[in-house]
Image (cartoon, rainbow, N blue to C red; front, side):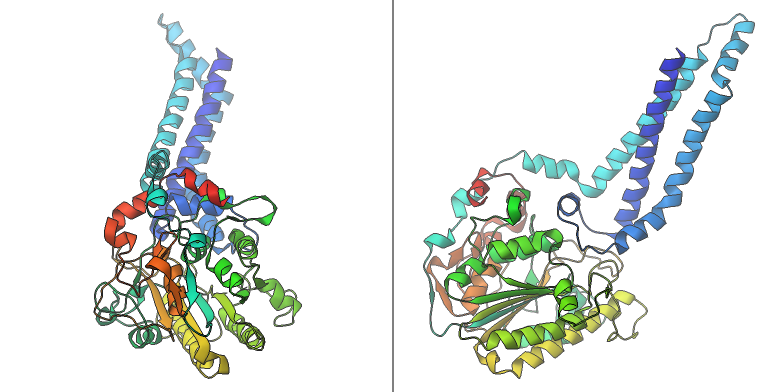
Length: 495
């Protein structure tokens, strides 16, 4: 009987601590982040080398005592009950009065069922935050969207209409249109991205309301690695794409594969470790891009060997390295594609570099305003270079902001992600409102570079310069998003 009681107490303590941990951590997470189950699952199952640990440290500091104190009280009560033989004494007390009461079993069951109740509460609460059952439910359903709508890039004629244009693809971490003021299509009282909104007005920007607008994230594209893939492959990210030996969706045809066949020299630059999230595997598997990252900056003397801030080097240093590498790329005889990824605006709050001011009390507001200024400096620098006249620049966010330190009181759909094509070879129809997602960026980028696409569709994406409906327009965004979250055997063709 005593062994049974101890086993119950042991399992009860384990369940209780797990339940308390779930309740506290999920509450902290919900108060600070927007991310759901898919982003968390992919992040923890992807290469973590090079990741910034600020969010983890903040979580440990915030959650330690709220988890430790009730867990210690629960375990302490169980230990005292055992050491002081309280259950036996209670049983003996009732026995002296001629009554039978198995306090040993009662105490064991109480600890066990209380622990189970806490664990159940933690699981239910975690599901309400991350919507794991919805994610699993969709994965149990099959989609036929590929069979119905996938336009295989290998079977579509893609023809340059004239001289091949260079491509600079600038991803700005977590860049939303909501950072703009309301009169510029955003949701803020003040415009924190004045240059970017002006750029959207002057250059090519697709919108569904006549003001500077952006695209919507579907399932499989709401975190950086997923966004980098889906915006250049025209399909969502699937965990099955990560393969052995550094391969990543090796049989899929992406923007970089197309440009590689067209004779482009290709590059990727970021300020962190490119290995994080499988990014280097993707770029090496498609077009074999030359990669510049934190390690490059150290090796080539842009920073000291032991230099590291935030995720690696701040954007200001990354931009300076990018300018040098761009000039080298432009000296070659072949056209180039040059993909860039900033990081200073990453959650939580962002990184305050030497260029940032303190105009606002909110740190994120200062960082975003600083990022806007740095983009302005880079774009204006590009405009002064000889290569600019033959170059298309895509300025885009990767996904919606994940934290809540710079909150916007909007639905996830209304929080669109910034996208503008600078120096496009094709002019847009300003009267045409478009509803689009990351899936549509690949064919639209090629069109902006002057390529003519047979049927104006590639993969699951649509050329926005055409009058062909996007899948978000023909199906509705909610239905499209649901289809992106379902399982499909079709992706086996790409792995």
